[in-house]
Image (cartoon, rainbow, N blue to C red; front, side, top):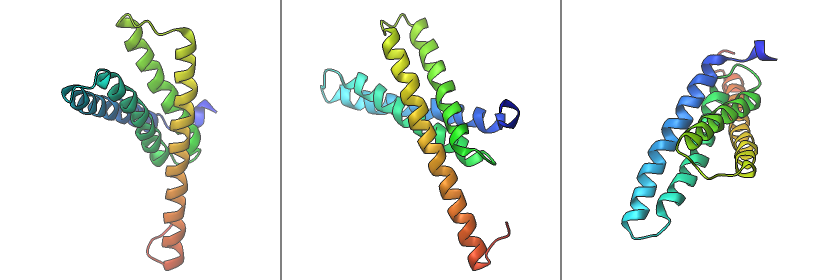
Length: 136
């Protein structure tokens, strides 16, 4: 199965996941902290990570030629690995259960987003074939 992975789609998906997670976490967390919400940065970080996983799964699923959901799931797992490494280097007090939960959640979110991207890609391909707009 490893030989059928599109490593370019995985790399682009992980890059998109980490970039979008960082941007959303900084903007949303900063905005919530400025409004006076005590745990605004934590909320921004969690929403940033979840939306980053979805973005990365979508990008990997869209770029993959086949097995879109699998590409999304692998992208989510790689992104979660990077998040865990960064958290451990920053002396995060996260327990093993939290790390396992992040891995399960990342596979589910990014896998669903990858599947959704593949489903949309197939629907567009079918629509263009029926109307004669494109070639398959």
